[in-house]
Length: 343
Image (cartoon, rainbow, N blue to C red; front, top):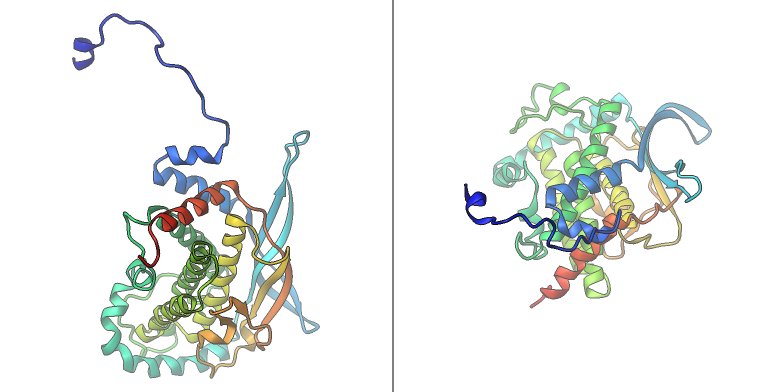
């Protein structure tokens, strides 16, 4: 009725037709955030692969290693059929049963902290934005693109960690002893590696890198605080009774490896084209070892420790930059540049 009352005599096209460029990252600004999210998810996941395979470690064949691969896909104008060159991101070997049995002692020891940390643990069941924004100034109006970027990273982490968890299918602590009695509902998936550890260490590393681009150099103080926050959130899952310390250590390795992959796809590799993938051999993780977030990673410099008995650095190749993800990274840097980090 409204149209019929105001449209008048039909005149055909009255505005110039100016089509957008095909597959131009600049078009992303015109779409709704959920649409950008779907595009970015396709972009990231279409370049990943998972496999279960034999692995030779110290001249011994391990039958059931699992690996997350990055696929560097190339095409040409004359031949659009894609060709993929794989390179490792991470490899995991499931811990022996004895490791988990020895780790069970930590569930009893950490349970003493439940009363002190109950509020934290409950509030950390969902995405931990409140905790990240206590370290850096995230705000849903002020840093919209940064939150989109972190959401994309969290979705990627969730897809990868669930595939690894499914393959390794490790039992939760309360499946080994009725005395664990978790203070929250035990999630309905495997324990190794920890998803909270994966996601929080990934976010911490990405935020540190992003703010380094804003400030012109990375800040050791910001890196330390972000990693302390990630580690505390991850350790709280052991306090709650749903994870072993080895789960947290493996999650840290997976999260930091995915962060480096994500950053390389967003802005290019921060080091040479050759950089390490990591193989986490759970059989070599001592059952009496607790998690210490400094053991593998120095948050002040972004350097990993190559001298741990349960980890093997493996040469790998940085993935190609994604124009789509680069657009979102660049927009995220811009919004911090227009709203100073330290007003």
